[in-house]
Amino acid sequence: MAPLRSYDAFAKPIDGIRERSVTGGFITLLASATAGVLLLSQILLYLQVQTRHSMHLADSVPSVLFNNARPKDLLGHRIPLRMYITFPHLVCSALDYSHDGNALSSGKFDHYHKAPFTFSKRKPTVQEYKSATVGGYGSDSEVQKKRSEGCTLVGTLRVPRVGGTISVSVSPDAWRRATSLLSFGVDTSGDPDPFHGRLPNVTHLIHDVTFGAPFPPGDNPLKNARHVMDNGSGVALANVAVKLVPTTYKQTFRMAQETYQASVSRHIVQPETLASQRSTLLPGLLITYDFTPLAVRHVESRENWFVFVSSLVGIVGGVFVTVGLVSGCLVNSAQVVAKKMD
Image 1 (tube, rainbow, N blue to C red):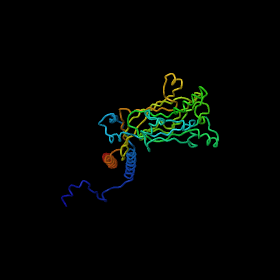
Image 2 (cartoon, rainbow, N blue to C red):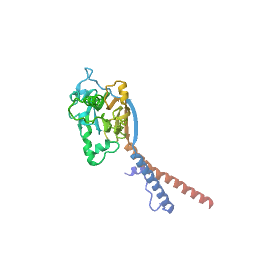
Image 3 (cartoon, rainbow, N blue to C red):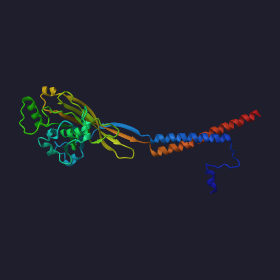
Image 4 (spheres, rainbow, N blue to C red):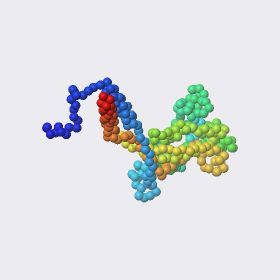
């Protein structure tokens, strides 16, 4: 073991030879404080999340129009579409909805969308009615009575990752009945008039419309969005165009999530415009959505753990070595000056 001592780089000074002083203690405290501050700052830097964005072409989606598109291959290319909308002045019997032209009134909607991935209509709750009503809603007893004149649409569909349209509007039968009653004063139906001799008011509140998994750092522009038809008749079409950006969201120590960011533009189409263009669209809400060919990758990460530990060791050791060198130079310089003065 004796030859091994010659390789000892950490030679221990003898206690009797070492000299302790007040200045040395002050320098040690200063070095310790400096090392502590640098250590704390390094920990704070490690805890901060670094975000990186990158863009790439989105994955191709097989289409049912091609023979080589197998049904099991299409399952992973469908995303959930969740809708939660309240029409405070439109009864459920006069409300119709459709996806890509397949309407509930024609029976095609139920043919393509089976439970549990479908929509349902119900009477709005008191809170839903109050949130959707504009210009006051009266007392609680009046709300209990008036909310039976509204309708809430809620549900989830599984839609393919291709562009499409969702329409929530007045049903064709209810629209024909209302226009016939106002134009000719004739009502061929024996049922009570749900609109009380007026045109249907399609003012509505979009509580939430979400495509796929929501993007956690972003806001949903289709949440708590209100469309007020204040043109006197209450008849108009809210046209909403949605651009969906596929986004891969990766957090530290978690699996990557496939989410979607939405860019929304909207405008109200007045009935005069619909009539002049001879549009077949009925008053209500029309959502047109499409997917961008570019996808975004959002990655949140921290500094590598080994780099972090190396930095801590380097900070602590570097501070004391540097202070030791500086203090040694100062002591030796003071001794040389003292000898020359003597």
